[in-house]
Amino acid sequence: MARPHLGGDEVLGDGSSPAMQQLLQRADDPQLHELYARSANIAGDDVRAKEAIAESYYLKGGIHEAALQLQELARREDLDYYQRARITARINELRLELAKMGKEEVREERR
Image (cartoon, rainbow, N blue to C red; front, side, top):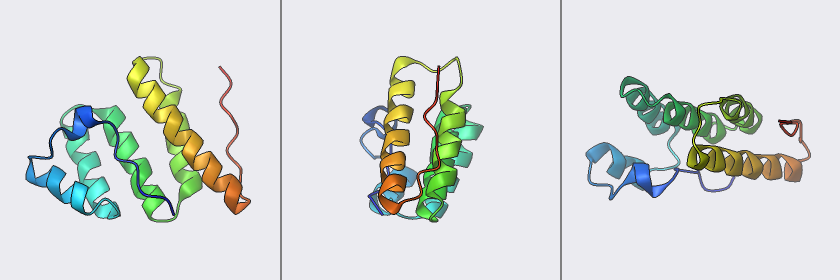
């Protein structure tokens, strides 16, 4: 599997918080992504929460599930340019990985 996607620097910041330091050091731990998802959800950032849940699925071997989660998120009308670009890029990475595995089941979103 490829290295987990953590998102842009604008959210990770300088990594000064203990939670972010743990996530940066152990980016391949699905439980930390789940914890981050809960934290983001409590903070009202449901976009980052859903991205983190998708990464958790990915780290548990659920590449297809991760791609579906992100596709659902990409359908939202309230995403800004950067959110949409980040999510679309991750969907494309997951599709490529699925294609390499011969399991391309995720259809391209039509807008």
